Length: 430
Image 1 (cartoon, rainbow, N blue to C red):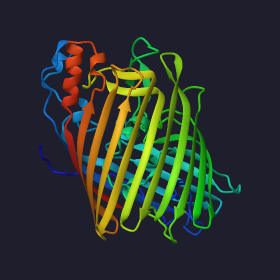
Image 2 (image 1 turned 120 degrees about the vertical axis):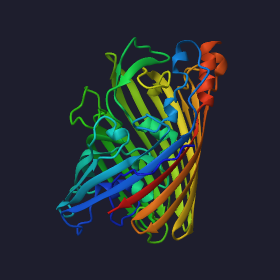
Image 3 (image 1 turned 90 degrees about the vertical axis):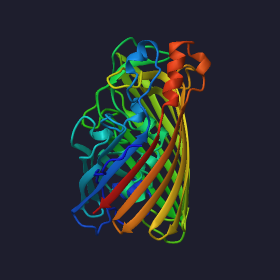
């Protein structure tokens, strides 16, 4: 593996000490928290991938021999297999407009990631919450959709890994696409991405609240959103996304904060449509999960699935190639992870995740499996160092369904060429 100097930055917020209900933490302010609070975080990150340029491709793919495949390049620039960059660099403000009744949340991103892949600076959050109706708080603007726990978590405070699981990355970080050829109802169509990643966010209106009964906490959220790129305030069609989430938590003792001790279960569903080649196609996402955290131990499990529009990435997997998009496809994935805080300043974590893509078409199906070993060193109250090593595998489950010859040989070569990934990340927040 190559080595380079590490210099990458990113930024988000220090959150007030509230229960680890992300709908509450990110959407609300304590009445006595003031009118204005500046916050931010930086995450300089270095990533290296142990992979060599591919060799042996046949037929139309032969000109790509000697190049790195896209999965073996560090995003979002996708130029080399090792890079130091400011992965996230976020600055924001939050506070009360009318304490206890109206509050706001603003956040901008200047790091190098999927959100800023086409713009140097992006607004990622711009919302106002109205707390007037008992049992039905209303949040409007740009903010995180009420989906997976992995999507909702505050990465600088409560996420022990550098990169998200394959399922969350592929199913929930959305880029808008346009058709560049014939539209195929089955199999895959060619397209091109026309926006950066969504960062799990959208413009819309959400009704939500939480209810406490003894040690139990129950919460819900229902959001109507555009389903368009996040830099566009307006919608690009007449379709709206509907996303709902339910969660039940048993809170141990009086623990609070984004790492509170609890046992939680949740489920969520998102239903929408996207225009592609002059037609509308479903985009359905849903999932279920559970989490346990008490004392030095933590465990989380989630299952996610997608139906309708599924992105397969550039095909062949090299720069400036058509993006493979399934319009009536399916995908599913899951992860199981756990952590042990064996010292007040040290935590080790292990995650295993599996993602099955394009499961409706045997020749297109691919399975991604990643096992991540992580260590976090909390050497100051607002600063930590994260080390990750990922054993990555790509399988072609139905190799015999691919026509014999160049196509089958190339598919297996590309799968076998996927390299392991190592990363180190510094997180500092204020």
